[in-house]
Amino acid sequence: MKTGRLLGLLVLTLLLQAGCAPAEDGPEERGLLLGVHAAETRTPAGYAARLDRAAALGLGAVRVPVDWARLEPDGAGTFDPVYLDELKTRVADARARGLEVVVLLAQSPGWASGHPEEPAYPPAPEHRADYARALVRLADELLAAGPVRAWEVWNEPNSTEFWPDYAGREREGTFVLVPLEAATEYAALLREAHAAMKRAHPDAVVLGGSLAAADVAYLEALWRAFGADVPLDALALHPYTRPDEREGPHYGYAQYPDQCNEDIDDLSPPWCFERGLELVRAFLQAQGFDRPLWLTEFGVSSADAWGAAGSEAEQAKHLEIALDILDRRAGADDLNVAAAIWYRLDDEGEDLFGLYREDRSLKPAGERLRERARP
Image 1: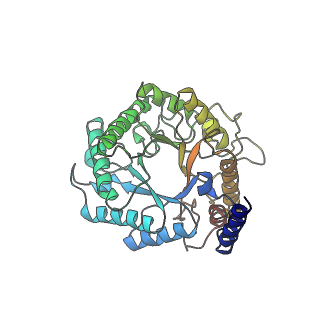
Image 2 (image 1 turned 90 degrees about the horizontal axis):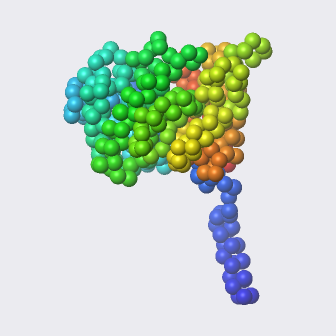
Image 3 (image 1 turned 180 degrees about the vertical axis):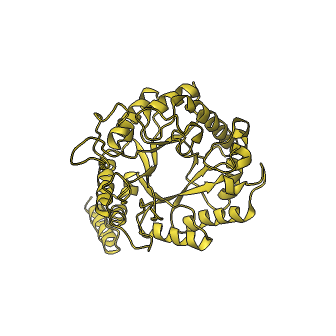
């Protein structure tokens, strides 16, 4: 016993001297994957620099958007070789920097949607299988460059911004949310994509939903459309907050992640962060769907246009509150969140959701996220 105790003390001493002292739990140790959305750039070198900035924050993942309209512009089965090579390089470069990759495939080519002037439209019903085939072929190509953590099927199908067929017919009281009958269309696209991916890549993690806000009403409609077979491995969610529309000193200010002004209107809870996650989690548990949530976008802008109260300090405060909530509640026995991906890495034009300014200097929100990613 005495010999074993002495040996143990010796080993511990050596480990401490080697810098192997037990560290505080960081996000990775807690099981929460922190990442950032890395938008398209004009040049491959520009994207490599973007990945450098993401890695400098100590994050674990990047969300890499893939523009289907650019990938397959001229017809089914013909990928643009230059763009495909760029995408392969992005995956390889991300992995070389220690970043996991979440791939989002969205934006329809005109031949698939019937709307060549506007890529935000989803594929027409007769071209849903073409989207699924494109996703599988993309996976075939990108997996040769490096592992991909998850594949996201479309972006915010419950929003008229990315499901524009319903623009002008938004649900009453919402900014951009589609009528609930639209859920059957996305369910059909997701079913095609999930089945095709599972046949070709059984171990692939296919994310469905990718919902703008914690839209439980749309989720209910989606689950009705699914029936007994739920075609997703995990639900992706974008739990943004909405501006406070009540008269008073906070009029126009985006709610903080721990606030939910449900008295604004009956549809306010979708635009709440913590309360929205609670409602989504409760719905999924009631359906017997106990897989983790992936927050593939969350964030707030520092622009004045965002709730008329944007500032870099306010953006950092929003981020801190959201991460505090996830630190306390991301576990499987509570909100069950596997990943949280900030939208976005860099400011561009009037879109000031970034962690870096356009001159590539770090904003206060970026500093806070770096501190949290590397405690």
